[in-house]
Length: 305
Image 1 (cartoon, rainbow, N blue to C red):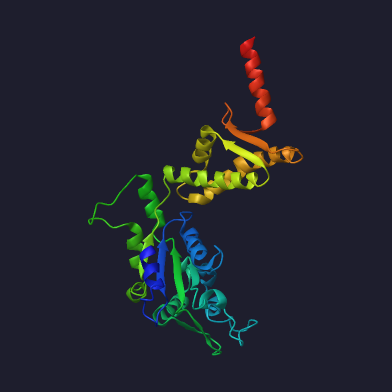
Image 2: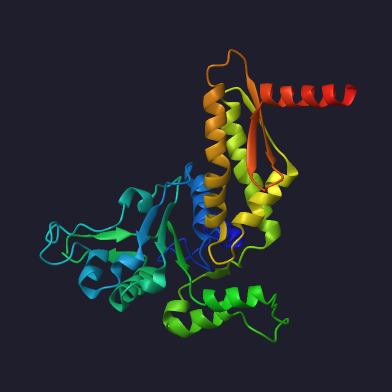
């Protein structure tokens, strides 16, 4: 992806096409949309500054017309209103636009044919004949879950393709689903693999870091023991649902107890410290600084006795 984006930023792409066309494949929750958000943050300054089109909403032929204008008989059909945010697509001479076609394989064939024309010419003609949308200064991203089920089954069996002798089931599914002329318009296909326990641990660390930063802004110091971190990974790791399962685990297992602990500390005149640990029963427990100090004092007194 970095290579494709750098070619576009150097002005070396054909002027009659979008700056880049990338297809991001893989199971849900592996970071496809997060990658687009990272690109938007780098190129446009905000992770949400891109136009997202939910292609699953265009699965029926009647609603497919809204891809290039409102469906016949609906408000806006004569005015040529479309799903696209022009400002986030057109960009400007100093800033490229970004559009994401999410779950592209779920769109109706009529939509895919219109998308093919867009990828080829960099222009989308509005159905009412009122104009067009220019994608020639825009990075086009598409996501797909094609082949994900087979990929997850292979990941659970710890299968790895032999170099140059076996092809990923995702690549085979993509080639089988899309027409050759559609695939020829794609600059690069990037395959995201299912999460591993090691990657899941990194995601948990990132989530804890975000929570710690939020608490630090309130003058509260957060520490999470290694045992508590491992428990969050073990509970939340799920190859099928990816990072979303980890986010849910952090929300239900960590943020709830933290909310209770911080509400008690909100009126404290000085910064508080909260320690998160794992009980003998396997539950997460949050202790405020005074509770931790009392526990340590009790331990010292029992030792002295």
